[in-house]
Image (cartoon, rainbow, N blue to C red; front, side, top):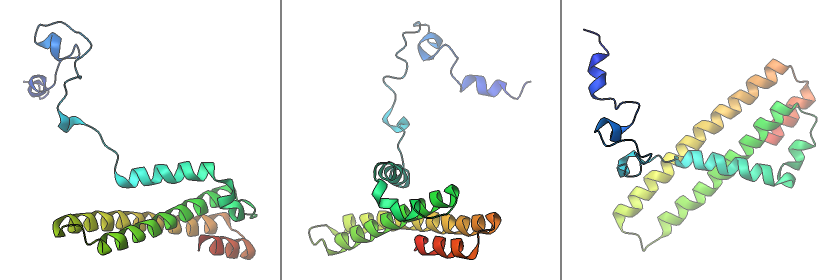
Length: 156
């Protein structure tokens, strides 16, 4: 017996579910898909997407980074670090707003605070990773003392 034979009963045929049931292929096989099969983007994914869109549309925001004599890869990491820090600051403000909002019932407040803390934790991890990558990149590129100081100041 072929070990893949067990999969033939659980995997629909390439012709689609309608043909498998003998109804012919109409092209609308997935129109009535269950709601549980929806795809969604995580909050962190939306945050990073928003940060990249903002960075592409705000040239003055990174003027000090762009004007530095650092390699482009270091500049890119510095922009990302700045975006992560700004998003963390937004989340801190959101967290404080939720804590101060007396109109929320306790369960809603607790849920929202847990969500915000999870987002902050993910962003903190991304910030630490980007900072470590920056240090590693500067070491590997053998930047001179002035460039290292410039990158460190811009990262803050």
